[in-house]
Length: 336
Image 1: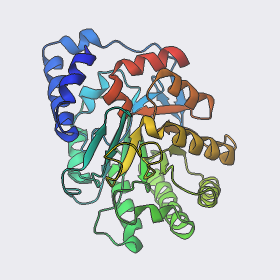
Image 2: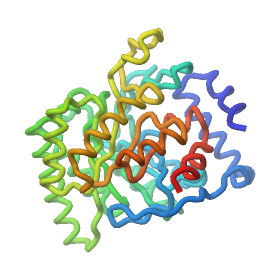
Image 3: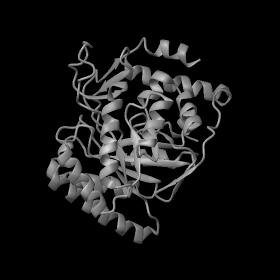
Image 4: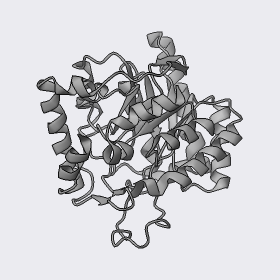
């Protein structure tokens, strides 16, 4: 069924196709057809960061930027949902067109730029959901916030998300917000993680609720910076790592006329680079910190490889676009 649906969606601009896909899913849900084509994946639950995940395949951040489709997407069989990236204030993101589909390569280039309704409205959306599973909230800084003030943006979002998230993700690795990746550098990263950890401890004492936080890492970081990142993750007892975000590398798509488009590359062209980065991080963290593998997971084999090489959970987004929701079940069957 998805093969036909995909052919229709791929006739349109990727951003419009995204909204069309949501419309289609809502129609299937209202007519009862969605329940007929979606079954509960058969996979053993996992306990990660003290949280029970019904299955290890989650929806990556970026699909539901404003926490508007949580109940709907959960019905597809995901073991957890991550929304965002959310910023303190609403922002429109970068100018359109800002998403480009590489059909033959099964890849996507996007430069959305954290377009979102802001953390306050997103939390209101979350208050209305029926979903009782694991919900991650991915946070970032506003586009016009100077880098020297970025920590405050993260703290604002962290405080507001704390009671409503199963876990919170510190996104410092998107290539589509100017200067953001500098937060992965030595001084910036340690200062940020130190402040987030202090805030986590305060909120834990005040609310008597421990909400884990994870850091999302770029696949383009050099080994020296990765060593520093891993060292500080261990030093400040960060709860987990998400590896990886999209890439600015175009090594695998140079023959495609869209390769010069700015933005983050995801999908199949990212598979090997994301895996390489995950393995490096896993070795440096010495199996002391859980890793969520994401980036270029386009098949059950990809999912199995990520689990075998250090990830305890995985997420998909581009794989969902190119392969459909059956990818969730195919991965779960293989990793059990």
